[in-house]
Length: 325
Ligand SMILES: [Fe+2]
Figure 1 (tube, rainbow, N blue to C red):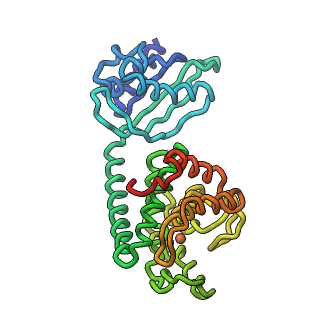
Figure 2: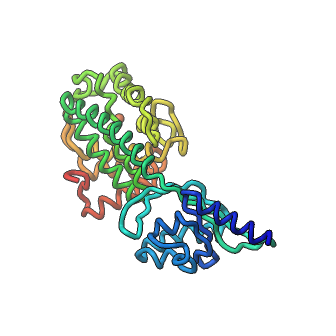
Figure 3: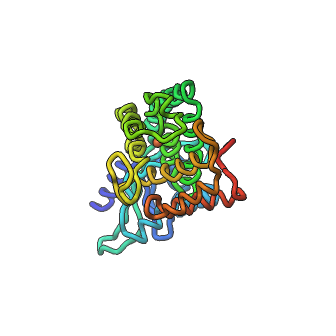
């Protein structure tokens, strides 16, 4: 009697919660779902019990949803507040935050998983709007550089493409790629207050001029550091002239002290600037650019990233792959 009461109480509690709550067995079959979860599938709880996500979604999507369940069962570790896009059975798109944890019986034997999924679409849309506004403002800031210094602007645009392609080849996720491309687009923005006679000078720079040019990383950092991004944009830009052996600037960071995104920028920056024509010299060509990366592989540049860049060039028959992309 007491057990029945407890079960009814729990079911009532689950059904009154607007979040989707579900228990699955070791074969990913639903053994208990609340009304919110069934309603999200457009069904009653009875129609969901005994089925798996494969019964409600296309094969690829169903497999994706089961992947995390299997990872929790394998590792015994919970996945907490994972935010992802979810496609409803009617094809509509939502953003959800999901927590999944292993579920044990009274004897401590693993019997499945328990999941709680919250619809966070409204919050995600607000965040996206905020981020879009910040990106638009930065794009305008980047374009203002074009009016004064079209070469640096076009270099930055190409570096953004190269960095994005390297990130894609490494399997980085959407948000990380967005941050990577934005960092590429903005990395030389700090040159905005360097006299054009110095930026375009064809001879060797004096040490005072070189120090001034080096300032561009700190200038850009100062310009964007207070903008609230979900990725460390200002820090990546600040590090794009750091080199693995500590020979870079401004802080002489070494090895893994240099963020992965900044290591990608370093490779993309060298590749583009050597392969392209600059206002103070003709293009040195892609072969020379590759020679520089090869000679600095491991000492200055990350060998995995150099290898990735070389593969992208190879896939494009040895030609630049960032123009008109
Ligand atoms: Fe730079």
